Image (cartoon, rainbow, N blue to C red; front, top):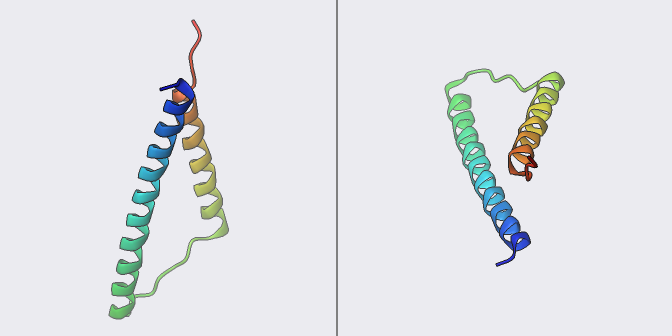
Length: 74
C-alpha cells in the first residue's frame, strides 16, 4: 500500500470517528433539550461570540492535528 493511500485511509477513519462522536453528542443534546422543555425549564441559545469561539477552537484543533500528522525533518 502506498503512503498516499495509507494517509487517505487514516484520514477517512479519523473523519468518520469524529463525525460519529459529533452525531452522538448532537443526539444526546437534542434528547436532553426535549426533557428540559418538558419540565418547563428555560433554555438559552449560544451567542454569536460563543459560536466564533467554537469556530476558532475547532480550527486550532485541526491545525494541531495537522501539525502532529505532518512529516518532521531533523
